[in-house]
Length: 98
Image (tube, rainbow, N blue to C red; front, side):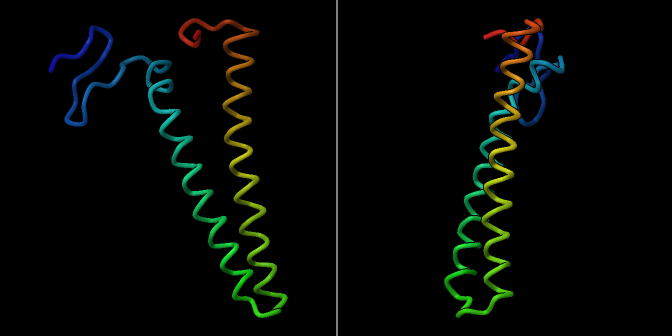
């Protein structure tokens, strides 16, 4: 399988050799990883709350899992939206266009 002109062949497949193409290829993968990790920590927080039996310390641990999971997911999503608005719509940086 041959790679295109602006890609490098590796053992893991073809990767773009320019930074913009590399980020475009793997940002969606990273965002999916963050979403999956956020889902896991949300479930851990819910489990900690359900099994706290009224213990305020365990209840606060569960709440902090849920709070930071949602905060991290929102930061990742709004970071993506910010890059799209600033790099694509406002600055029109070459390589970031749709």
